[in-house]
Length: 320
Image (cartoon, rainbow, N blue to C red):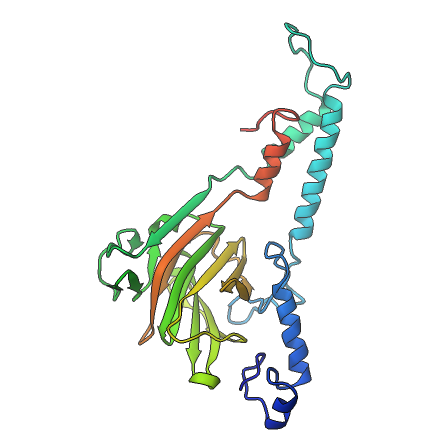
């Protein structure tokens, strides 16, 4: 049996006391890591590894930027307070306007200021829902076009070869990428923020060993302008069963990325270099995996909901 934190074998004497961790220190570290994964995913205040993925410039715990959740919360509270002031300043008489009476009053100072503020907020982004079931053998929506590049189909599953990018997702920035797949030999691999085959973030979920000694690790690297950065290898305290299907999910939000397997967070990282780009799959050497379906969804930001609240025809006119 191996330690869930470092993946090294647990000593005989230690196993009599604890069959999950090789030492008290690793048990404490493992518990802390588990606690972090239970936090709200939108806050992203936990980091398995915070990495720039560059050769000499990692973003460590002491140098990385503070999470933006507190700033976002302050903006929300400030705008809500402003909305409350506006509600009070629109019509202090509390009565309805008589029929036939035309609105002749100029907008209040608060209304003018809030309108200007809203004009600087991000515009609404129409929700995007993409889904691909690999029942048919068409890869026309996956670039590069054609049927080559080592991809193959088998009874409603696709086995990736060289990198292909989902064409309809290329212009997206923040999104949720979900798919169902299984590892058939060595690993299952995917890419996010992939604008083209020369620029993307790649992740490989790899398994090795047999039965009780089976180990899982995550490998991460970037390809920028056709050049690959160093590959970062992370041992994971999870165990994937042979030839079993799992649901995988990657959430891309700004410069932050969260990876989940079976609904559990296994990795987070930050990298600001690629702001937009789609999703894709690939395999290397003798690696082989099967994908059953893939889905990409992108919705409105919370600011859009706040905008709708403040511009519901009661407080402010809509800002185009």
